Image (cartoon, rainbow, N blue to C red):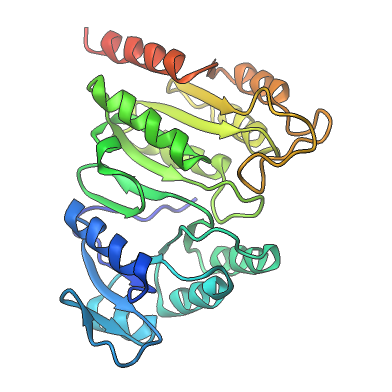
Length: 295
């Protein structure tokens, strides 16, 4: 997939900036160093939020600022329209943290972004970050340290804990992408394999998956097809979850053997990944790898 570069110079728009979440996370992203250049809101009477100019449409914001990325902090029912607005404006990276996007809307948004060669991360994502440069979304600063480990995850909270534990060991991440836990989404694990294979800042990869669907199996197949040469570590949540019960995310649902832990573990191990049973095992294994590369 074509993945746009994100750093401190990247101009970022916040759609829905006048809402409570929009205001709060705009401030947190700016405090981290993200270059928030504009906001978009249907409230025409709002000229700016904490000095960030607010426009009625993405096209106006892009025309004025040259922004290339947007974080969409709008309601689930407004997401598709906001995605359409961003794509039509020429935005190349869209991040949608909102949960509960209707499946038909997600299908339409995925097709729209793919046809326009736009990278869409979400829905139901904690966001993405290049630690030390910029974050787009909710990722906590305590879990973000620059380093050689690529990280992609379905679960927000589990990945926060993983990132925090690794940061405490002096191990940071290169590019962190939360793909989200919805069954239909903009970016899936397998689609990120070529990016991480080519990224010179990424020396190893950590995938945090979960039961349900076939995304981890698709990722394993992509590793084999890419002949991915970097070490891959995997942590799969939900190995003891009961069949037929959705666990947290909409996509975390097991039907018989479909979407189960054992199938995912087997596929990943066949592709050469190290599958870890717990956060403690993950921390120990990645710390050992990190120390070995420093010798």
